[in-house]
Length: 479
Image (tube, one colour):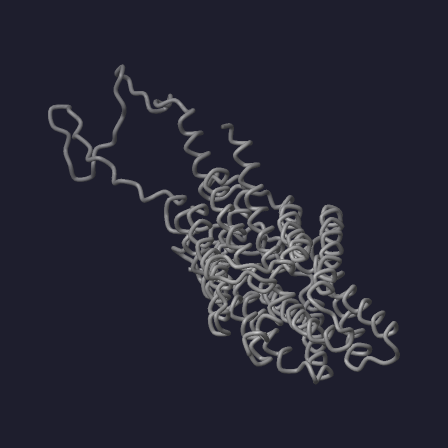
């Protein structure tokens, strides 16, 4: 199979991985609240269950990224991580108790740790100018899963039968359904994913290879190396060694060269302080944390809010997530077009403006809804629309910028750290919102303060949010 075809199939498989992660989120989130209620779980268990999934990814993301950077293999990591998704979703299907349900999300969350390896793989195999487009497509695949998931949920809610000793109903069906999908994905990864060689911009190893190729093209004997005698080379005698009988002393073999830079460990001169405690990196990690914290907090609040004010059930929630998925996919398509015409920092600024407008709207109109049912529903729809609208701008811009201002050799680990920061946000967001569903002014006020902080940080660091051509040698610049 030609390399170009392998590359396309590999990228297609990566899209399927993110598609399934979106489907899993969409089929489980609308029903997990009622599922926990049937098992006698208190309200805070909703936040615990959603946070457990992110907690596992937080711990495993940097580890998987570290392994992929050292071994330059991604396929085995994906296959290994998917096993936890399969087991975790089967545990969710069993659902004997609230603790088993909590453990199932904890186990399944290990699987999302492979995302750091995948983002590192994409960074090494895409040119910087194409990176925003590729990341937008990959993220759109996850949003497509969020769009397709509710459609599956419409049919899964009709399940009501026995499968041996197990009960299959609208609450347990998402678990066995996702278990089967992840099993099918294992076969796809085995057959259609390759650890293709890096095709990114010139790095030290590539420059070294090109120098070697130039050396191979040069003649072995240069004109100035020739002596008066045919076929001999002039070799200066070693200091302190006389030349006896006109014969040159036999030179000792040159010392063996050190390992090539491409073969050495990518963490040989790596420094966490120099890599992650730079101003621009801190701003992007803060953007990752705050936007995901606010997003997951609002997602946790939405289900109880719609149940309280609009009496929404599983069907209505699934339709709502389906509509949001359409909006997000349209947003990613627009961001893909926009990122080719303006800088990523401009896209990030637009996203932050939209997030601020959304949070102000929610603070004014959703914290204490007024008016009748149509008026309250209209306020709710506008708030959700504005919140979802800003997500593609912030998500694509901060991931693409992060990949350009961190070292290419350690992209897997760097994206693992970035996703762990996001994982921490998705842990704290549901916990924060789950305990404050009756105190929306406090919850939304803190979210607004965090967004204001991020906006100020970005305003002061705006000039530094650009690609650095010397980032590959960032760890070597200070010794």
